[in-house]
Image (cartoon, rainbow, N blue to C red; front, side):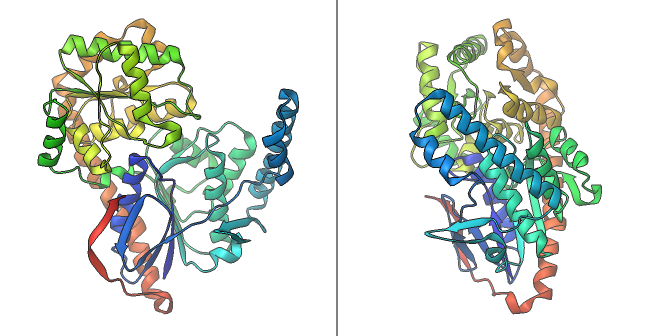
Length: 445
């Protein structure tokens, strides 16, 4: 049996953590071939294969070419509106017709009708992430196109740890709703907007679950390895405040916001008499947390320790955040890595995308103090942050919630994803290939 594993993990260690956790469990499906979309992870098992593909957005080719050349602002705006209208028309068509039709998929230098390409696989698994929204239209289209193609062929479609939304356009809502109604099972990582979207789409409650983030399924690095790294940075375990800020094309962080975040973390550092350590989650050129940390350092006006080693991994970053006294940052997985180890973390947000992340986190972990709008930083909330970090009951609450959440995530993944795939494998022996495991699972390049 051949399982296509789709994901949105590139140079972001939070996304890679979700993919790695899922793959560690999918490899328990005996006799299955896993065909995984390209990523920075290397899978050293004979039954795991890397496949490169791209589902292009349904924009007119002419518009894409003209948009790159037209300099006049009014003409460019007109082209954007025309492209958006074309895309929305197709989204509406797919949403109402519940079929992807003859859309194309690109693999290397060739292309094929997506339905024909998907016919070679027996099931679709989409790993956790925050891709199914209007912020990343390319990812939304890819996921929905794959779902419809597999559903048209009556094949299982399993999604785990998803953030659904924010949705900004009615046509996108219709496209997403139509895809969600066709999945076999979907779990979401937060109990707020994602659950609302599932219910609004009409997904049967028996086919959904709220499980938390897939990164709950990876263990942190060994304490000795984390300790050596922190020693090299001249910080002691339990005696530093981890910080993070995300700047990129999909965020709305302005220079003013950066100054106010720097002011907040600087004041908290002084009040608690603890050093700051910038911990990156994304190292992609377009939204590098290391580059953002250097900009924050300039605003602080003093040294900011920055974890910018070349040999980072999701497990190591999770270990570092589990060793912090507290954490203040914008990245979803920055906060999640800390919270799931009992470390208080305040998730900063600005804009609807990060607002959903932060408020979803605070709802999942059961404490509204864990989400803070960057727009409110002018009110000098450092005292409140320090009170949150020094609340003795909060750490105990987080540890108990983490234990409960991790067990629930493991149980759901085993029963709702691995078990059905095992059953399907046993029913289709003609498509199965015996797995031959090596000693190494996955490494970051």
